[in-house]
Amino acid sequence: MTPYVADPVYLNGQFLPLTEAQVSPLDRGFLYGDGVYEMIPVYSRRAFRLDEHLKRLEATLAGIKLGNPLDLVGWKAVVEKLIAAAPWDDQSIYLQVTRGADNKRDHAFPPATVAPTTFAFSSPLQAPTAEMRAQGVAAITVPDQRWARCDLKVTSLLANILARQQAVDAGCAEALLLRDGYLKEGTASNIFVVKNGVLLAPPKTQLMLPGITYDVVLELAQCHGQPLEIREINETELRSADEVWMTSSTKEILAITTLDGQPVANGKPGPVGEKMWQWYQDFKNTVMRKG
Ligand code: PDD
Image (cartoon, rainbow, N blue to C red; front, side, top):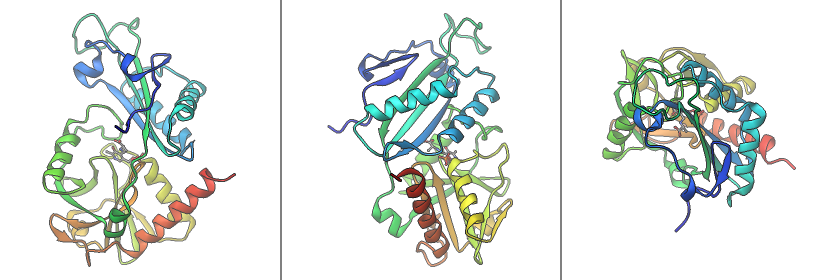
């Protein structure tokens, strides 16, 4: 069977086989989902935008008042060791920190003597298939039932999970989250819209995850002179869009060509998304695969 997690994994300062990695059932990640995570794509054994991912991890840890168990050098050493040991050239590195395991269950923070639990592993990068790229994917819209700090990349993801399962049950790849009539993002992706040649991006607020891929897309748009507006997108604009795309570290830039059973424009991936995908590949190849 193809392994989806490489050995060794990293747990609390040690590199060890997955089967030997043990966490207490009193861990607050298990009891409360009290933790944070990151997902970093790796191309040709080079971590993409590693500093930015580690900066977002730091911001999320600060947001939930949990100390960072490792400094930048420490995290980079963990990531590099996992990449080197894994059998795949293209990988995704998962990092997670929880508030650790106390000797009892109590909502309030445990004493400072309780160490956080730090876990990291590598998996093969699951990029979209050629067919998904060529046809685009289907999505549904659902009400955004998450909390009010969606800018933090926390492991408590139940509202995202329920919305994503609703999408899967409807034969779709993603659920787009609408709050008060405005598009925020997907359950595990940021969403962009194109109308009349202009790329529209929802602004970074506490109701959206500041995606690393989102930032790359904005940089590429600016660098290539692609007209861009960063502003709230309402439901009517979403439904009358010429193009809708999702972006994430694993999906890169992927067209959404069906929304709630209706075609987006002509139901095919559009030209601005195609250009952006190419700019993204070129950027990735120059930054990551040189040498
Ligand atoms: N998810 N919005 C949400 C809610 C996300 O979970 C993600 C990423 C993104 C895109 O962020 P980035 O471009 O930094 O990957 C936006 C990752 C892939 C995950 O949960 O596995």
